[in-house]
Image 1 (tube, rainbow, N blue to C red):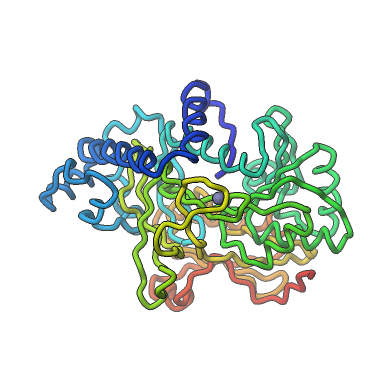
Image 2 (image 1 turned 120 degrees about the vertical axis):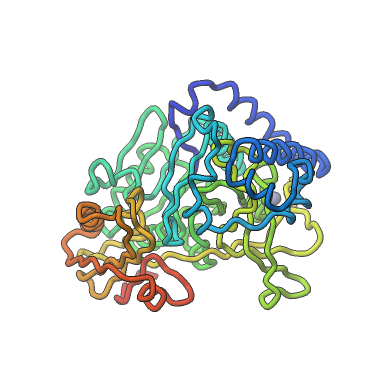
Length: 444
Ligand SMILES: [Zn+2]
């Protein structure tokens, strides 16, 4: 997720400009105005879900509820939480019967949870995503049209996975291939950032951290205006190293493919929960909470997606909140949270000394995978563990193996199909999509 340029979503600029203007104003609006907006959108979403989504029609009928019974966020508790497993198994019942009217895009989510699910996100949700990120990035000084860079691997998986970078002139975006990150590439990355006058960089904390450490080791200077992190928990030592290497603030964020909750950090350090994006509820976990801190699981309700509206969706990530309604120094009325405690990715290291931080993307869009884990046993020996369903054929297996091979370079890669029971044993209580048993000798 980020400022993303997909022409087909944005051939009508009017909704974008309208929403952009609204979001510029609403961040300073009264709390009552924000609550009114949330209430209006929530009621419309619930009415639509009842009228068009078989899963919700059956659920409301079974509970003896009418859509009017959900008058605002505080009434949502009348509905059960929707788990990721529900989404995975009942996805077809969660699709609106008028799905195609909303011009949806289909996504397979893999992320860090290991159990892929299918989500449909409609045009309006994509417009929201664009405008929401536009506002968040503007907190770091970004203006539309200014050059920016992204450290990742997505942009290279389909095209040339061995390419180190790619610049797209019309969007002024420089893609840096995270899978090529190493002592040599870092010199070229730094040169390209300067050449294209890039002032903003986004990526996952673990990848940007390695990038920062390699820059320092090579004694290279790169001065940016802001770095935007997403996709993993940003650890304090990562923030420090990134801010030191790029001479700017890191503005962190939390989001997820299902797009029910959006949290973004302002320059004053506050993590703002964006109420125009979705409704956040927290399932409090008593044994982790104290009097001054509530810790619980994030439950989010989409306010925009008509193609597949998700009500009370449990994302599986933990959040910390202070009691009351603390205000941020920046003066924005958007509510604050303390931080989001997601799961961090492990880092793989290749035989030629490169660091691969997002290896789980090799499962992006692959069907029939109930669960997976990528394990590094030695510098050049890897194991892909898959709990497979029928759709994960031998051809799919070869594809995954080849994708990982392209990321890692020369390596022995074995695929091991595991049962659900074996998976429980292998995964342990805390899932990590990537596990490395190799001493990585990370600089710093
Ligand atoms: Zn703030």
